[in-house]
Length: 217
Image (cartoon, rainbow, N blue to C red; front, side, top):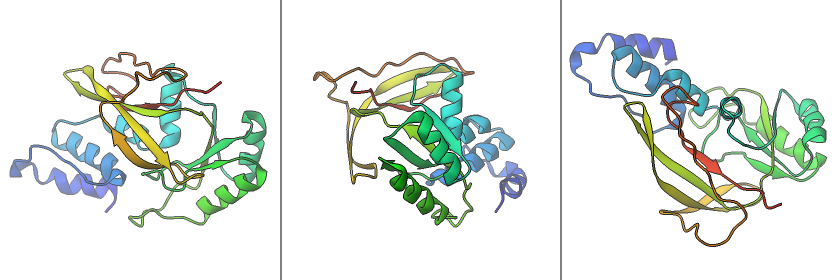
């Protein structure tokens, strides 16, 4: 079902007394947001959800808001990725822009590995829900260090930090989350600490959940 058709279907259900719209799958969150908006139900702005569900859009929104992050480039094909790699420098992280759970995210250390990672994405044209993928590649500067996520809740136009979660990663050269610990044990010395900044209802999204991965150098 397309986003437009889904919204039209739910628009005819206003009298059923829905309190909210949810999904168990990341791929449907933009549709959930648009249905909630159409029905006048609480929810995050659809544009915000769409930006958060696209890795390239996320990078662009955060950069525009002045949030520090890795250097990155959005590439249409392997040739563009190779050219961007010369500017950013290896090692790099290659990502699809529209998959979740770390699928096909890879660290690459040279031109050969970059080509293999890009080809793997080209060979995966649909996601696990049989939806067509956007055929572009996001490459990013590799940041080396502990990974944490800052968990927040937004209500009434104010974002509140709930806490910080430690993440353990395995499966190199992939980045597979093998465990979480809350609250994070970040009192031990490590180079750099995650820094949060307050955002009002307009930016970057009105709510924010992000990972802080400090450089080791």
